[in-house]
Length: 263
Image (cartoon, rainbow, N blue to C red; front, top):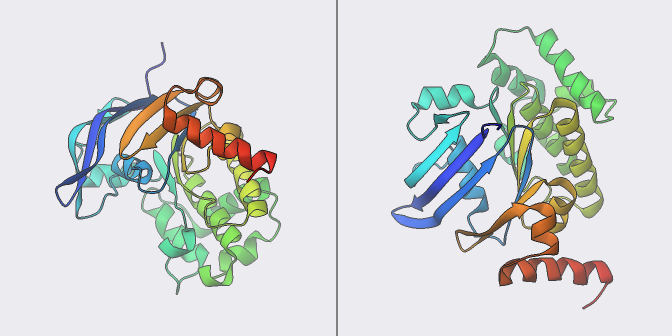
């Protein structure tokens, strides 16, 4: 039996002493795609930030455990977690432009990020970035690398975010609503490109979104969050076609009404 890549056990997360995620448990296998869905404020993003050690000063895991490859990340030292971010666990943010430095080029920031984890030349990093951009069918990688974030469109910045998350080939990729700020056409392109990266590199993906239609396309399993609790979790087909919880039924019903063009 394959050991879980990520094992979240009875996790509670609090901000400023107030619990916002309650008793959440799930597992991810190597190469698996998990869709974490729910409305804004349901605790989806908080959950993956907890696994990445990115809760900030006011956030803390107050109960439970999170194991990555059998190692409890809650007990790990800060330096050990920092070393894991990139080579082991990557992150695509909701708005990549907002987390990049506006006065440094993409190439400069990419070089700094990669050299935190390995000794490598700028030329080698450039080559790796071009290879990923080529797989995304982007032919102007040199222009993108020489650009500042504000010189790129929202969709192009998200592609930069995918490239930067992928360049160290992590085994687990967290995607925190990476398409929510984009128009519908670009959203579809970004989803296709993420799935292509998944197929090429075989990494597991935990995709946070409020759009159950996106995870219906991408995911192997779906976790449904509501008011900080995991209310439904299972194989995609079971959750979509045989939902057990009223909230899940509402989410799926909303997608069906939109697809049918109903009011």
